[in-house]
Image 1 (cartoon, one colour):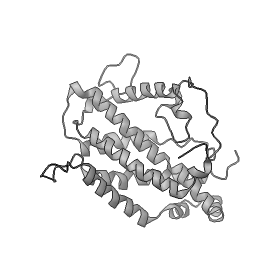
Image 2 (tube, one colour):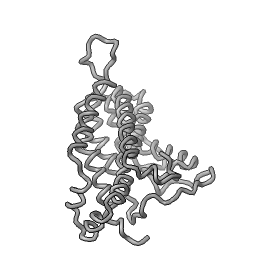
Image 3 (cartoon, helix red, strand yellow):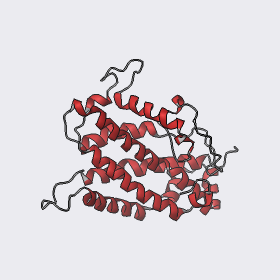
Amino acid sequence: MDFLKPETVLNLQNIREVLVRMEDTILFNLIERAKFPQQKTIYISGGIDIPGFDGSFVEWLLREEEIVHAKARRYESPDEIPYFPDDLPDPVLPRISYPPILHPHPNKLNMNDKIKYFYIHDIVPKICPKGEQKENFGSTSLCDISCLRSLSRRIHFGRFVAEAKFKSEPERMTELINNKDVPGLEGAITNSAVEQQILERLKKKALGYGTDPSQPNQSLQKVDADAVVEMYKNWVIPLTKDIEVAYLLHRLDEE
């Protein structure tokens, strides 16, 4: 997807293809994370003493990585939403002048705190065994960061979905927005059949990617497929809808 060409970004078919590929990224990241135990210490504020930082080890490492990536202008890209937006330096590389694709939003639509919460408190306990391996705190945290980034990008892509849907049905969307009709907007952006297809496809992928075809015992899964499907059903799809509705409610605001 070329963010210098808005027509490619707001093409619903292109968006669907990107979202399908994101499923693969998220799945492989979860498979990598599932190799390690839960490691609760790395999620506790002060669980590992870090001078000058009050959060958890994962938060510290995530923040430090974002600082480095910001210098390489990662967060200049319209599809990247940082977890620590207030701590980022200016990029070292020259800025890219992206054409306007999304309507400016007063609240910036950053759902990363919710994503981090459900990932740590709901997903990790379901896909990882209990226990800790202190020698793997660093490796585990790097897997966490990959999971958090891929989930964030997938959920925040709802902004582009919302803009594409607005442009495809401007009269209907305008009426719903002017009436502040949240249930109407939710209904307009929901396609239950497509959501079911997503969950079924995800289950097949999780079973396929999480199984070693050379092993006779196909019941051994690298990641709990049902937990992955539940994650999409209970968190990823609902939060994406929240993003879409929040975006649309301000779509007609003056810039």
